[in-house]
Length: 547
Image 1: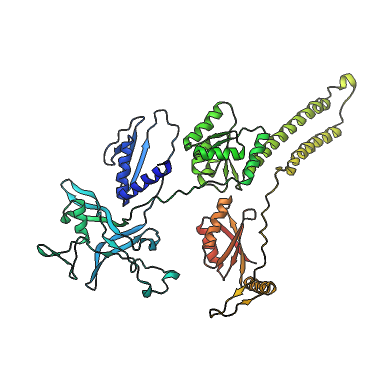
Image 2: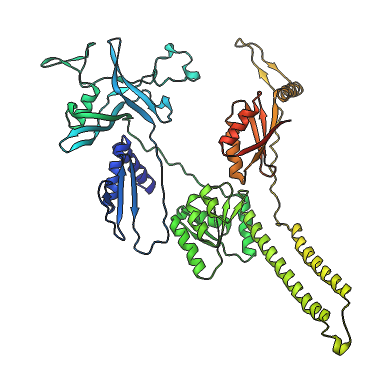
């Protein structure tokens, strides 16, 4: 068994043992304690020591784990994850008897889910119970560990449109059939046993039995449906980041500039090595955590190097903040951009090279201006002061002195203006033209099978397309929204997503340079609706104009 299969099996085992979030928290707690973590309770005093590892639970549904460093704390890293478990929650009155013939569980949809995936699968109920104990109210985990209910699909003759897509009503179509499969029951809800007819136990009775408590002691419950079908390892899907065509060009440019390039990545060594060879990077550090990236940056700085860090994710934020110059990709996370000194507007490493070239050109220009100003003043000021007059009878006319000072300013400003002609040296990427394909011939089949098909020539097809496009242009309205507050590609992406969600919006084109959004409308959408979408996204609308 390879590492991937082992990891998959461990995950499947964990899921099987954790039908609800409450069970998951208990199992995670056991794993933490096995790793040396000590549980802390919120109603007790915490006695923390250096080097100690601790965890605590909140509401039996969340876990917080942390470690105390042994050295002096200069800062800390926090990693958090919110994982939801969309499912069906059992309501307070769980049983619904339908026409005295069968029983359904009264459930409600919890979180977002694909409803159809719950159908025709063996289901059961798990969660927690609040029970009355000798020491007060206690929480008890419960798992009715057997097939208990099912959400059935109806036969095709009940709905002929089934295969064309069905919209399910969770409160009507998704209520599961509930039965105690341990014995047969009649319509009255009784069971034939050796001792005669007996009442069928209700859901809370089954839950109390599974939890090992009396049903009368139950004060409250959080119960959920879960799928009992076992998970299976089907295969491995390999996913890798594609190397942009411009990355090799950027790396090569840095090498020519005398810049040492190091790749820091959390990916495995095999993947990192493949990328290193493809890009021609001399050094790579793989399988590193966020703090390891920061540590590497600090080590390089301690060696006397000037370090620039480029990153786009949350994991890169500590290293970006620690570097002499942090560069964040504009399409990256907000945390990365907040930690960086420079934000690259495009997802292109060549922009980082351009930033370095431009900074070097600026520094070189400043040094040139300082040199020539110093050189000029060293000659002009003594001459204007009459230093050469006693020996050589040479003095500078004040008018010439004023002209010379103006000429000096013109020279310095002119030298600085040369930066306007700065070129990155890179060729802009051209979008590949769409592949030219042969002209399609539309084939329209007659209604009756076996009748002759009608073939339309390319000319007829093109004419039809022209008419269709003209009709679309006639029915399309375009509005330009002037927006204040957009600073990067992340901002434009947020606004674009908000506008595309508005009903009637056909297409959205963003312009960060012009600070506007061009919106194509399939139907008339009020300016107020478009404005509200942008404002709700966190940006200010200056005006809306129709084109």
